[in-house]
Length: 207
Image (cartoon, rainbow, N blue to C red; front, side, top):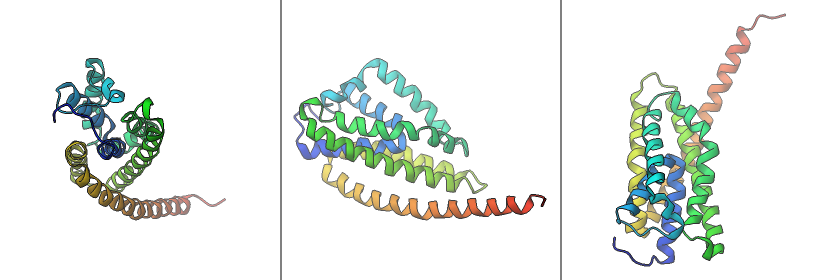
């Protein structure tokens, strides 16, 4: 894409993509966005241009490398998700707001709310789905889900820049699917927790 002024629908698509994808792979979002700006593939808004600095690219690239492997180890992936609950959601909100910058404070605030909500939805859906997958003894479903995330994040970022209308349609479907996953797997994990709790209680000696 050549350097041009982005219109409001495209800026909203980019903000939504940054927020949503941050809930799945924050460091992939930071690195992919930064490297795309650094190589001149997309014109980053002023609020995001920090991501294309060599120092930021080095830091986000290193964390992307770490997360790539941590996300594919059963158990460690859920611990990684738990820790990043405190990171992904506010980062998604901040990235979405940065698309508009300080000159458009009302749009930036709206983008932060949307980005944070989308980041929370995708993060909870990912964490719940991966925790449920970790109840299976085989590692292949876990690795497959991780590879799916590795593919979906750059694809969604690309769509938001090149085809905003298609991105919004795909995002709507993704959000519906994620809410369903949260409900189904959340219920499964609660039932599993109650079952283990009852087994533990039954195994305790009576006094």
